[in-house]
Image 1 (cartoon, rainbow, N blue to C red):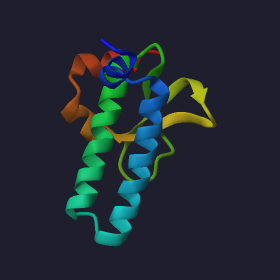
Image 2: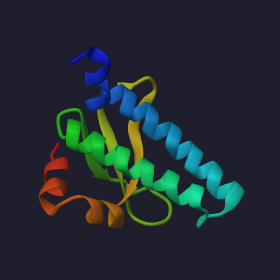
Image 3: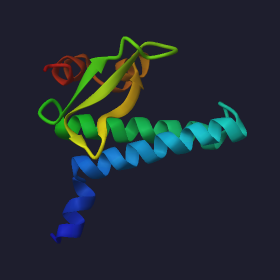
Image 4: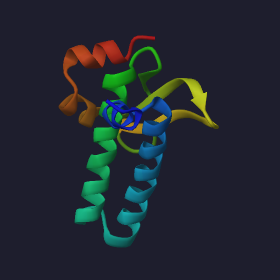
Length: 115
């Protein structure tokens, strides 16, 4: 297997975080331009969630972990906190708690919150 193939199968923490941030930005723009329920908004939101789950399943709890963000506006959400900053980022965006409970098992939720 080539290095490129290995990178595709298991992207680095840095790559996943950059993709999550980019997709999160695209999702916010899509919501503003086309509305919350547009296909592009929904697709972007779901892709961000998939990338966050991949990041957690690949690298939690050693390099990233879930922590409830008490200052989050809107619905209750977890922050995906990075143990070592990537660039100037300390986190990989927010994941609503209700979504986390749908896409992660109880065991994963417990494991990913360990600090």
